[in-house]
Amino acid sequence: MKVYIKIFWVFIAVVTLTACHKLDMNYNPVQPVTVPSSQRLPAIQANLAYSLYAQARFAAYHSYYLTSRTGNSNAQTDTWNYNSITRMGAWRWHYFDVGSNIAGPAGMLIRSNEDGDNNFTGVGKILLALSYLSATDVFGDMPFEQAYTGSFNPLYDSQEKIYAGIGKLLDEGIYELQHVSPTARTMNGTADLIYKGDYTKWIALANGIKARLKLHTANFTDGYSEVVSAVNAALSDFDDALFRYPAQSTLNWEKNLWGEARPNPEWQFADIRNDLLNSLPTDVLMKALTVDQQSNTFDPRLYKLTTPGANKKYLGAKMSEGLRDVNLPSGTVYQDFANLYNGFWTADSSPYPYMIKEELYFIKAEALFYLNDIHGAYNAYKMGVETNLKRLEVEPGLITSFLGSTKIVQDAGKLKIADIMMQKWVALYLQAESWVDMRRYKYSLNAYPDLYYPKYALAEWGGRYIQRFVYDPQTEYVYNPKEIERLGAAARDWVFMPLWWTEKSLLK
Image 1 (tube, rainbow, N blue to C red):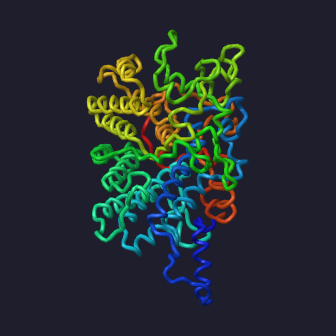
Image 2: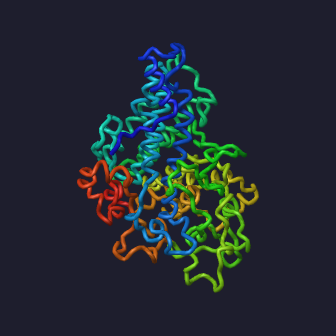
């Protein structure tokens, strides 16, 4: 595997200027030759939004939000066959575009340390932790300790070891932001596009990421109390971590990748483009958003997450089948489904979420549920739903009506884990974290009552559910074959090998 270094244009300038200096040609001793952290951070934040999207691009199908329109037409999303894929952009976005610009040989952490800007060090470590957590949760074992050491074939660390490293990064990031040097340069709204240099919010986000990290393993480590503590620490100062795109822009890279413009610059990977034009909402999604089928009463979020199709109908198609679904009414066409574009999260100008507040409430609800604090779990569950309704700007009267509907549990004593997980699933629409939850529960009907095995998943998978992505074929299988062989990652059924926290999971 090649060294994970993304070369900025400024790095090329550095090399040029350095060479000129050695030859005593046209060297300006006062001209900066490396990028200061304040200029590096915005690009890292934008790249992280792209990286998270690259994971959600496939995870949104694997977690049953979407299906292809024609059915049995996409190898990865319909048949769960990754053996013909030629690129895996999600791998590259994490290692090249995010990780190397933070932790690489010319990364922000080195520059911020040299300049005494430990505020940028702290934020950089928190962002690196989030990037690693999201990446290992779709790939499993990955290079961690040797990732940026210059090795062309670094060893893959176990996911358990990576999780420990992520926790350490978060602790170190929090410490730096609690002890910012008085000489550190200002982190303002130009340098920090997420929190405008508000360190308390970055610390709250770090605690939120901790809560997510700990939740993934709490069921087999007896860690639910730690999860609740991390959530409470986060909620004290939490503000949504969103990468915001401009309301209007002619530049492709200033548009949300779920948007209708489908940005496709020349340097973009084919597998990272969205295909919402040729996708449909699943019947699982529509059941979750239906309050009363007889009266066609829907969860008001349906009209915020999607926009009306041409025929103003809201059908749902079976996963992997699309319009081939024989249960659809005779004569069904794609115009009978909601339009997936221009919803709250799927417009060109939509923000891209790193982490949102309602996730924390649902994490707390799940943890308290297993700690047998049913009333606490119920209150957190209700807060998660209400927070999501308000985020999507549902009208106050409709919020009150929906919260009192049969779709929402009205008695704490009747709360089930499916109530928590399904409402979290709706709230995290299109986010890859939903796929983590589904795999933690091993696609259990106890947590996700409407799941079923896709008709067109290949018979050779033997009824197993998909568990992970393949590594990038253009780097890992070419430059690091020994590690691929050691892991068994060249096998046709590699994507069905459970991740560490799924193997260990006691959830049912």
